[in-house]
Length: 161
Image 1: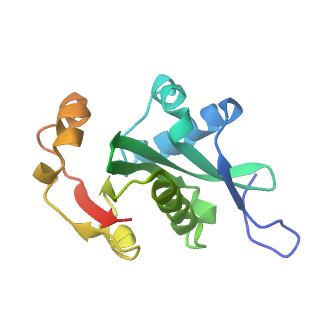
Image 2: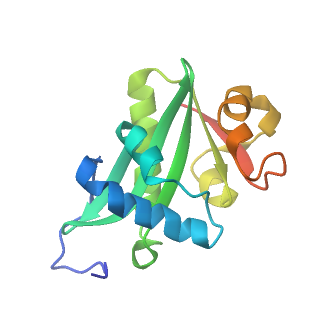
């Protein structure tokens, strides 16, 4: 099914992801990973971090996904932001990120960062560039296991909540 905005469609809504969504989340994220637009995620990783994920749904179809992953008492990461091609440029990605920012605020998180291949998108949401070395929790926790380490080509950005 292809998502096209029309008067007959219900407005997209953002909700917490459930186990029934995992395979579609996996397909969506890895469709971007195949084009080297993001890092791949295994089904196991998605199940283990399912509580981090929210999805954007329109007429029963998942059109976008995003995760807020807490790393420390004052630091979280926005990761795995992916929106289906035919639902892009309609504000879906921004709504997902804003939802994660609101959740971080509610949880008392002070800073959110992202590693991305689309820095301008995140700059438009108030994120600013930082050096990856300013994120030791990320580097020593996740980056060491990444196939691109230490030659990471993603941009690091951060935002105060």
